[in-house]
Each structure stands twice: as C-alpha cells, then as structure tokens.
Amino acid sequence: MKGILFIISGPSGVGKGTVIRALKAKYPQFVFPISHTTRAIRPGEKDGETYHFISAERFKSEIDKGNFLEWAQVHQKDYYGTLKKPIMDALEAGKIVIREVDVQGFHSIRKVVPKENLTTIFLKAESPEKLLERIAKRGKLPQEEIDRRMESAKREMADADLFDYQVWSLEDQIPKCVADVEKIIADQAAKAGLTIASKADLKV
Image 1 (cartoon, one colour):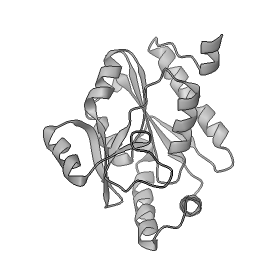
Image 2 (cartoon, helix red, strand yellow):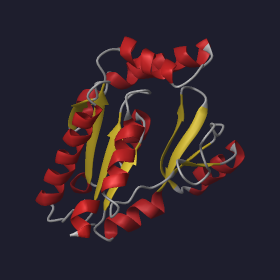
Image 3 (tube, one colour):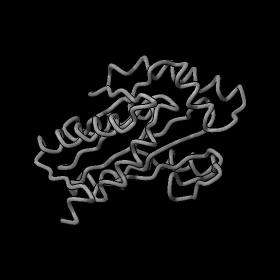
C-alpha cells in the first residue's frame, strides 16, 4: 500500500470534529471515510454526512461479517465503527485518508494497518474541567451521560503517549491546532513521496 491513514483521536469535546471539518474544507483530494453508528441522530445532522446511522442489529451483523476495520462501544452505550474496504482501497490507490476515531478504535486499527501506512495524532485539552465546559456548550446532556464521557476521557488521556504525535487543542487556539495537524500531515506525506495540495493550490 502507498497511501497513509491519519488517525485523529482524543477525548470527547476536544475538537476532533472541528479539525476534521477544517481539513475537509481545505483538502478536497483527501479521503474522509464516514463511520457507522447506532447513536441517535442529533438536530442538524444528516444521515450519510457526519455518520451513517444504523440499528444495533445491523451493526452487529456487520461485526459478524468482519466488515469493520475497527469498532467500539463508546461511553458504555452506542456503537461506532469504520468499514474496512473503503479505507484499504484508498490506501492501495496512494491516497491520504483522514479518520476520526476514539482511543478504542486506535488500538484496533494499529493491529491491522501496517505502521508505514499509519500516522496517529492525539488531541489534548488543557484539563478535564475544560473538556466538561466544552461538552456542556453542545447542549443539555443528562448528568449520567456527562459522567460517562468524563470517565471515558480519563481513560483515553492515559493512552496519549501511545500515539505518534500529541497536539494541543486549546479552546481559544483552534486555528493553531489545525495548523499543527496540517504540518504533521504534510511532513509525513513528503516522507512517503505523496503530493498534497490545498483547495487554493488546485485553483492556481
């Protein structure tokens, strides 16, 4: 395989989705696989954009068939998973693939994707308290859900040193976080002999 899969991970509320959206807007030639989940669709979301929303029964069927590159039950509740074929096909074609996964997914993927085709990035927040503030800003969540997410965050942050890179995602410095991730992607792509171009470059 000639491509690179870049995993972007970190605790809930750290800004993974924000970084992914910025990269998607700037680099249309990158591949951004859409995950499947059993969680309820949120206001403003559309099936097939952020996630493919499916039933738990169908999700478990895909697990049994071995179709997921990684899957996990997150916050001891909903299932999330990334299909194997779209990612492996893109890597074979020499593409840069960007994927947001939780820490459980990171552990699964690095057992399957060769190290030379994988770069892992962990986004860090200032503190668990700051994460709690960010989660609260998303809307009212039951206290039980908040508690679950904070417990998950503590476990996830304990694994940060296992990642290739750690990038600060400070609430008032999101553009810097995006730029830091971009530099990692550019550096690793150059080492692999892959050419990347932003949307602005493509218009030249």
